[in-house]
Image (cartoon, rainbow, N blue to C red; front, side, top):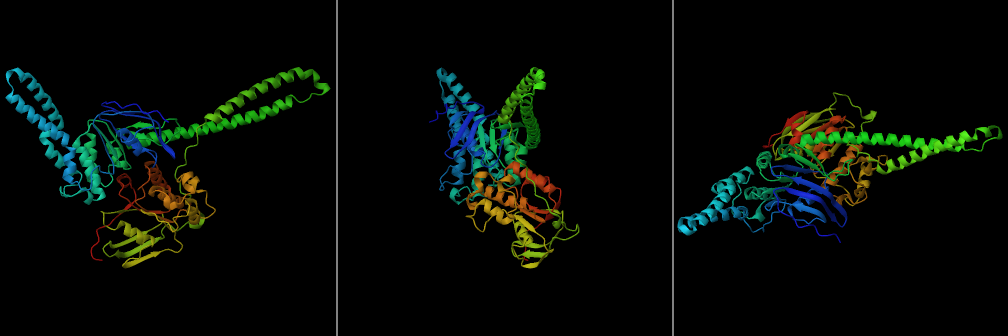
Length: 548
């Protein structure tokens, strides 16, 4: 039975020291130490399942660690996907609750002012002190601009059009998320903890939230898959992915781009250390093997004619044996302490000669295609080595165009044509499987063929997920299986619909880097601002469909 964690104390800092959190089937956090100072904004990144949400819950006091301690400010707030309100509560109820403490301060200021005005000379000093304290607290709480502040935050997060009398149970998932954020911002806690705060925010809402956090005086700790948001907000990035060190958290100062550079440098050092150790292991193994043979040779029975040299032979054998013992000891130490090989980076398997296609060939052509109420008339040609980004607002038909492009949806007008033998691969937003009960390994081999390398060797699917039903995996894990199929047997045309959704930031970066080297054509649609800002290929602008 683990010892109870020490009772947390109050501080201006948020600090986790040697925190452990275990569940019956796995260890989620092990010896995690992290400090967030006032004014610091720390982004948590790492693979799905690395423990980001658990760490936020432990930091907020919602979850109790199995070991270690947490020091936190008295006023701390965690914003996650579930609003702590009954469905019958209204939007006004949520916002009123958020500013309740500020309203109390406002009432206390009014009462203190009345008491000072009515105070006799004997109690005037005490009444004046009470008023001074209340005035300072009211100034800090911004009570004079409270109503305007609520309106500003509500508008900034895109909630102005939601009636205040609407009940929480009637809100969409996106509206709930934005209301939770608005409630936290207007409550002005000392420390703010956010779990995927830009989910359901458009670019304007994300920019508004980023500006709010940049001016936040207290500690801010957040987990996000939004690379642009991390770049705009973070003063430090804390990575929960393992590296060559024994540390459970690798922390880098600066924004996301600084983190990427530091992570690349760390991987390079990891690779160099691993290569040097493997080379040293090879040398030591050779030294042990050759030295042992030399000892055997020098201690062979001597002929009578060479008996005079036995003394010198024995001395040589002793020296060699000493070197062998030393080499064996160093070998055993290095075999025990050597760093593991860095996980492989995402790479497409490459194309065989039979897939070489003429540079000017049209792989797929769409001629004036349209789908009623879903896709305006569009013409498009895709050639080898093409890089196309489908652009346009929500509702402009990007996913519909993708379905027509890959041949899974017949257009209501226009034609789709493809060159003979062209192979088109799709990474869909929502992955579906003909046989969800099949294991991930079975699904993979059926798609790629028995000649393919094992699924686990792709680095995309962990060993524990290989033999379980593919339909039981999380959305992110299922996308990894689908991506593994495309990586192992790349098509001529690779079509990606929101490719970075449900992927860790590290894997999203690897995928984008792999696409640069991909020898076939690529067509993708994405809301990922980081990906879109760095896109160097052609853009195809779609407009909302009218009558087709």
